Image (cartoon, rainbow, N blue to C red):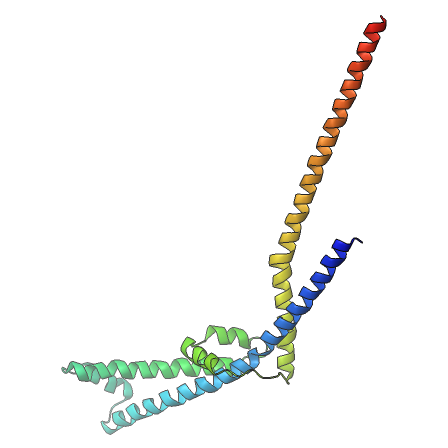
Length: 208
């Protein structure tokens, strides 16, 4: 094995190790991030539920259901009052959305939780969670599983999208150059044979 090949092989081994570490570290933090996200999501949900409870209390005092109370508020001739109906509808929708997201993420299995998280993600909550996110050393089986998955994903992406395409292109380029060189050598050999044949013919003609 040439020095260049040995150096290339050593470089690939280093890249593999670096990618394994990066994949394991990044993916092992996913359970911790989702846990902190759920805590912040729960805080938003509690606040929305408190606001909803206040509106429901006002509706009960008026002997109305919340839907009827919202409808009457929206039909009020005073536009300032009518706008409160939109606020209340927003609170109702917010509670429903956050409750569905929390239940979906919490009830998902270890393997389906990332998909549930992405399907129900609230980008504002996720951004606020990321702003104060504190990485933690994974000590659970879930963290270990995510670390192993991270290694597989990172290596799969690297070899499938970067290493193999580049290697295939480089190999095809070498084969093309080798074919061109072989064709040139064959053409040169054919030319030499033709020249020898002409020389032999000339010498024969000189004898005759």
